[in-house]
Length: 476
Image (cartoon, rainbow, N blue to C red; front, side, top):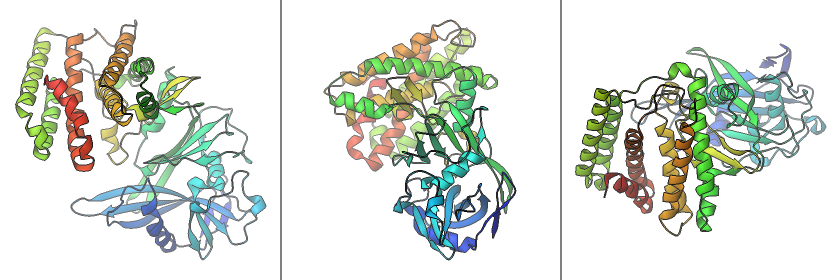
C-alpha cells in the first residue's frame, strides 16, 4: 500500500503491510500500555483508518497513524477510538538517515512484520519530526523544518491517558502531548489554553502548535484534535509531589497554596472572558438534584454513608432553604461558566521562575466531549484542589490535621482575595460569602461521597480521608 505525504502529495514508502498484520501486533502490544483504556476487558479491535505523515522515504522509514477502534457490546460496554502513531523501518533502512536525536529504545518496538520493524511512533524521532512538519502553528516564527534537534528528547513515563514527549531543543523547549483517545470535535486541551493565552492570561503553558486529523472510517468522516505542542515549564515540580514533600518534612504549604488560589481565581476570570457566551445564571434546583443523585448512589454502595444519612438529609434541607431564600430575595449566586473540570494538585506545575501553571484541560478522555465541556460552577475546581490537600497530607504523613487546614485557608484566601480585584468577576454583583461557602461545602460533600465509594472498593485503608471531610461538612 502506498501512503501519500499529506503536505506534499508525493508518494511515500510503499508499505507491504495489511491491517490484519498491524492488528495482530497491536492486540499483543496495546494491553501493556499505560494509556490503553480497555485493560482487562475483552474487546474487538479494528483498524478503521491509516493516516500517512510526512515521510522519510529515502531513509526507509514511514511514519503513519493507525486509527484503532476498541469495542465491546452489552454490559460494561466499551467503544473508544484510539490514535496509535507508528513508524515502519524497512529492512536495510540507513541508520545514518534516522533523524538526529536519541537512539530508539528497544521498548518502542511493537513487533517485526513482513515489511520491517514496526515502532511506537510516540518514542521515535521519525514520528516527532513528521508531527512537527504536519502541525498547525500559532505563530509565524515556527522552527526551521528538518532536521530538528532532538538531543535530550524522551517520552515521559508518568502519563496515564496520553503520551507526552519532552523536546528540550525544539522551539526553545517544548512538550509534545499525543492524545490517545480521539473524539469528534475540538479537544479542550487544545482550544482552552489557546483561548486563555489569547485572552491575555499566561497561567498555562503557551500552546505553540497542534495537529488535527480528518478520519474517514466506515461510519463516516469526522475531524479531531490529535496532539498539541506547548511551552516547556522550566524546572517544574508536580504540585502534588511538592505538597507531599513539604508535608513529609513538616513544612507548611501555605505560601504555595495561597499563590495557587490566586492563580485558579485568575484562571476562572480569564475563562469567563474567553468563553463569555457560556456564562449564565445557575439553576439551584440543578445543584440539589445532582447532589441528591450522588447521595443516593453513594448510600446504596457504602454503609459508612448510610450511617450519616440523617445528617446528609439535614444538610440538603438547609441548602434547599438557603438557595430558595436567595432566589426570593434576589441575592446573586455564582454563575455557571467554562471551568477546568478535573482540577487537583496533579494538574498544576510549580516553577521557581514562572510560578504556578495549570495543565490538562482535557478532562476524563472516556467521557463524551459534550459532558467534559459543559459549563459548571468554579467551585467545582476549587473543591478539587481542597480535596488534594487532604490527600497530600495523608500521603506525606503530615504531623497533624492542621497542615491541611492551614493549606485550605491559604488557598481560599488567595482565591477569594483575587475576586475583590476590580473587574475580576466579569459579571454583575458579587455573591455573598455565606452563599458561596454553602455551595462550596455542597461540592466538597459531593466529591467526598464519590471518594468514599472509590476508596472502599480500591484502598480501604484510605477511606478515613474522605469520611473526615464529610464529617467536617456535616458538623460531626
